[in-house]
Length: 336
Image (tube, rainbow, N blue to C red; front, side):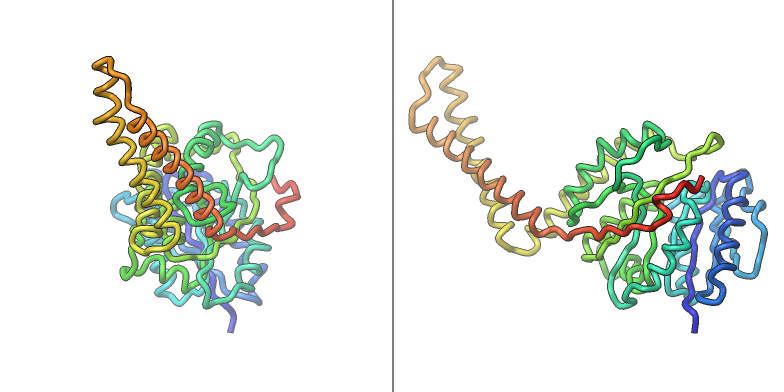
């Protein structure tokens, strides 16, 4: 029996783009018709432009309508859950604006089918895993990645993860079921933080991540319904909160050597701060020489705190999971 693959496309303000993109997907469906059954789920997230009306309907295309605009994350989850209930085994999320080239599916689908079905695995695209020339990525997106991705990488339990906000993601059935399960603490964001919350859920569950290099299409007619400038502070808040949650989960809820290093470092830092505040500062304001004992205690505890924290960083980094690099031949070719 052929495997069933679902391509989920949240659709909002993708006028003049989703029809062309869907036509390309149908060509790929025909190419794989003897190997797997591909179903396309278009989730109309109450698009004011009725972009979905441009789609050429076929038996394997299903359109789901939201009465109100719920956001790209909520629309994707609607499509995922519908596809899961329909018996699909693999799930691919792509954007309706065509920035994810459909041609990658010629290699991505066979790779996805080759992965173990009983392991937690997420395969995602990355625009930044390799240096490229003349890459037409909007400046604000590059700036956002430069500022926010270091914080995101610290909060996640992975080494080598790039392009945190990339929306070209694929999962097998068991991974999707674990991520959306109400049994686990994996709250998924309904709007533009959806991809970030997916990675946070993967980190909490210990999902293996495979990342393939890709080129996005940002043509002259490309537009986005997301205001990138307005997203900087929400993303900063999200990843800061995620960092605190991740540290709590890895080192406070379960005790290990990293817990000892982190807690001891924080305790020494707190004690040194108290000595400085109650002993050193009052003497400075009263023009009294700081006693050697107080100065030595403050300096020793502060330096010890820094040393222990450095050891904690080394311990934390050494226990992170490596992201597997995947290279598709199409990435080395000019496809646009």
